[in-house]
Image 1 (tube, rainbow, N blue to C red):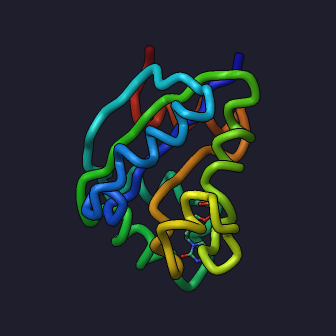
Image 2 (cartoon, rainbow, N blue to C red; image 1 turned 90 degrees about the vertical axis):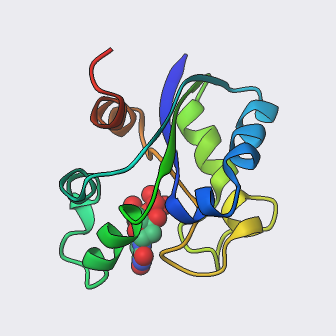
Length: 134
Ligand code: TYD
């Protein structure tokens, strides 16, 4: 069993897509074990996107992810990390295949609806970052 961290980003929440994202995860056969609404503090956003801090879009990215409420979930199941990454599709909506969440609901970066951890190690760090200690 593996865990991953999923976040419906501010424009996903604004567009009423929390249910759609969670529905696709549940339909796949994965289990939602924690769920919360919240707002990301700028310092936490900067930490979350630290691997992109030298990119020209870093400031906009932090501004975007902190611009409104987000929905956060812990998702569990066999190979949960890879399954959820497959469900959300490529980072750039232009490259995300139709049928994926980003492919079906987004048109351009940085607005790609949803975040999901890219490895089991990152997932544990992100679950701790956004949900705190168990
Ligand atoms: P990244 O961690 O590379 O991708 P993913 O979200 O698929 O794990 O990037 C984090 C976010 O940064 C991404 O979801 C959207 C934004 N972003 C841009 O706005 N422009 C870009 O060129 C890239 C690579 C990312």
